[in-house]
Image (cartoon, rainbow, N blue to C red; front, side, top):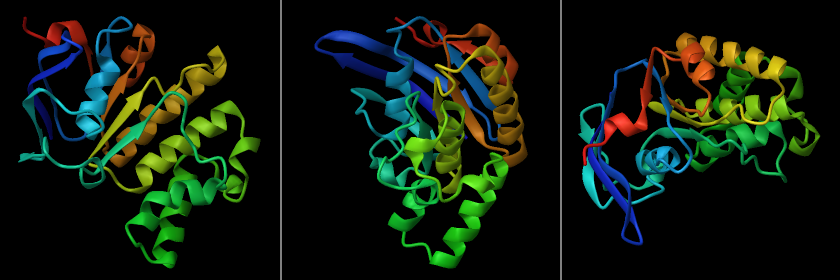
Length: 211
């Protein structure tokens, strides 16, 4: 499904990714661990098309997407700070990508209702995002990424900053959700327990690079 081969990214002559290769099968949930500054977020940004690779190739469903702009890649990305639009309510935040694609209103409403039900927040569709709790905001960020039915979902420490009980509950819900939808997922985390709990496979980014 997602196949990255020999990716090289250098910042100001400092190598961040060195010949990194990773393969994720269709519907597989893979957790990526490693210390801060080891290139985990850079890898996600390369896959999403937000970062240009110096060399290497990225394939999605057998098609090379390395030169494709981000909005044509069908890849969902959830950052640790959610990045919800403060001026839009919950439903409008979720439907933003569909609106850009020119989706008809009726279909858009149906898709928004479906993902809100998936994340258990149907009752919050009209709420302003600044009135959401931390846990609710994280669920909405996941719903917004899922609504466009991405081929791959990239999660960059999406549960950071939650208390232990809420973290455990959301982690379990997220794992269930991804398998229910059969969403191919790359989940970045510092937390080894979190990685083991959610993933089919756990990889350390340092083992994916050849020097």
